[in-house]
Length: 222
Image (cartoon, rainbow, N blue to C red; front, side, top):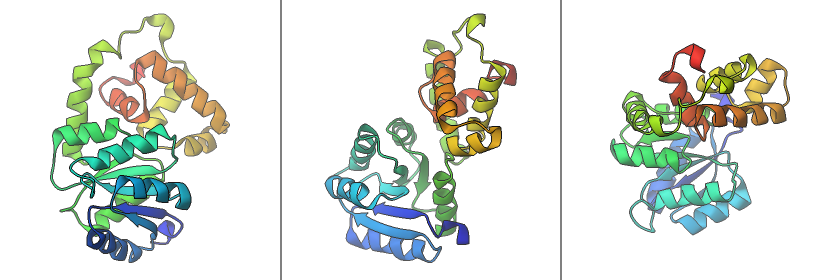
């Protein structure tokens, strides 16, 4: 997979053995594993120094159960450019929803194949969101419950412009700001500003919520 050669990965798992296993497997797919860590402090340090593109983070690190979520929150609080993928031992509705709320860009289960993991990491590196049909259903259910309090409550004066609707559609398709910029021949700064207006108008706060909003509303609403 030549397209993954420049993708830099941090692996964070509860044991050195677990980290090394993922390292060996990912290197077979030409990923560059630049760092590994067993706890939150080490993982944060490695992210600051090595600047990986994507972090594969186990829900449980050596710090204890759900410490992987603390790492995701810390990365988001720092404004880190690292894109996290949460590694789960089994399907878990609450953990899936919480992981995305903490900043995860993808969910992967240990029982799935290394080939699928390679596809997941590559997709996240390109700015896409990775979730299987079951995890997507968890998110849709959670979003539909929260929706009446936020989205869908705007008047006609708050409708999206054609350009905003186009950008919202491309975000829902999984494109990054850079890809949208190239496709629409607009600066990334313009895309970012426009996206903030879209969030405000439809009552969401991030790309995942906007993608889910697009799935639950007809095209004329987005």
